[in-house]
Image (cartoon, rainbow, N blue to C red):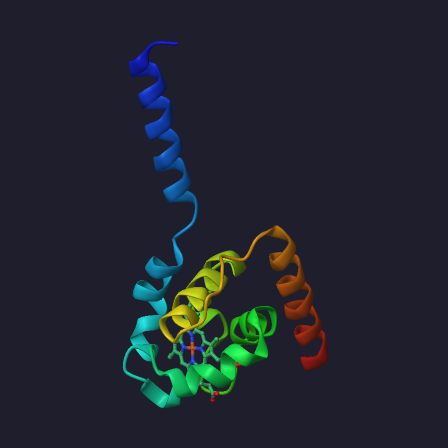
Length: 126
Ligand code: HEC
């Protein structure tokens, strides 16, 4: 394979990956920051270690699933119906880490657990 071909394939892969899913930071900026940047309506403010400390203790699976389903003034999926669980999870990681956590992007195993909990919560609400 020529060098040029290798490089174009690499570039295409990069473009394809970034088009597929927004990063946690991107999702945060486009969706979550509206409320969480300033702590609107009682939202735990980004970087507020006290407010997030309690939430971080709930654990990544629980916190992500609960937030995705909506909690009181927090709208389900941050108010964006098309947001995937993986995208939402990335934004939660971004905010938790801004408040001192050291969470990793949810992998497939964790996403399965998050999905199971979202499903359980939805059943309980019915
Ligand atoms: C319309 C405003 C609004 C938007 C947009 C929003 N949030 Fe929230 N969020 C809130 C409020 C208000 C709370 C506090 C809810 C409470 O405890 O009463 C909250 C709480 C949370 C919690 C804590 C849930 C818990 O278990 O207590 C998480 C996690 C969260 N938001 C994540 C996100 C993410 C990720 C996004 C973006 C994808 C987002 N939020 C977008 C308003 C918002």
